[in-house]
Length: 227
Ligand SMILES: Nc1ncnc2c1ncn2[C@@H]1O[C@H](COP(=O)(O)OP(=O)(O)O)[C@@H](O)[C@H]1O
Ligand SMILES: [Mg+2]
Image 1 (cartoon, helix red, strand yellow):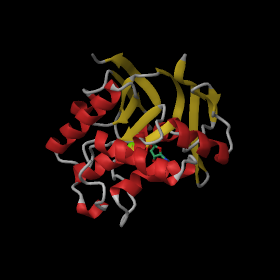
Image 2: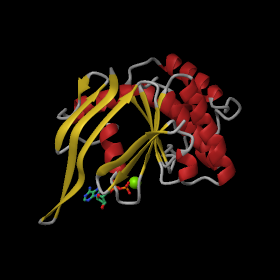
Image 3: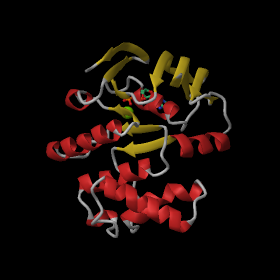
């Protein structure tokens, strides 16, 4: 069974009296445990597709079945619940809460998932150790390097044991050495059985993935295995 099954997805935006067809009919199947890079030139629709995959947005038409649930036409509340359970996000700009320790940043998504405080802190500690930050748990974001901040964000993405890790340009704000460290971390996360989807416009980052999907002008241009 596909973890992600997308059929003829379209996404239009209305801008003034103009309709912009951003995604023009995308079909995609992604199985549990895959490691996928989503590539394409700027403006090709990567972030729009990522927002749909991550249940941050719904399509204008077409169907999206995520882990057996039809999320194509779900209400915002139901979508938020699915998102919290199924998706772990990693962003280019880390998106951590300032003046909040690494431990509390990582524990935060567990509040909405209904765990007790002691469960949250124990799990957050475990995941921070997993990403190599066992000695930085009480540091706030501005006391951490860019690479360490992204590790905190990866730990936060993992904390609720989601079905999919979605990363939009996760190395976009990192130097090349730190980028390699973060990509090695994604390799480990994938090797642990997680499904990883990363958006990038950099070939050397996409090279880590086992499948490369290329978008062009709102359509899938190519979809090929990479290892
Ligand atoms: N909310 C929106 N309203 C209008 N146009 C949008 C909106 N979001 C994205 N677009 C347009 O859709 C196209 C694809 O955007 P995006 O998905 O961000 O591309 P990418 O991530 O591949 O660079 C762009 O031309 C962009 O201007
Ligand atoms: Mg983008």
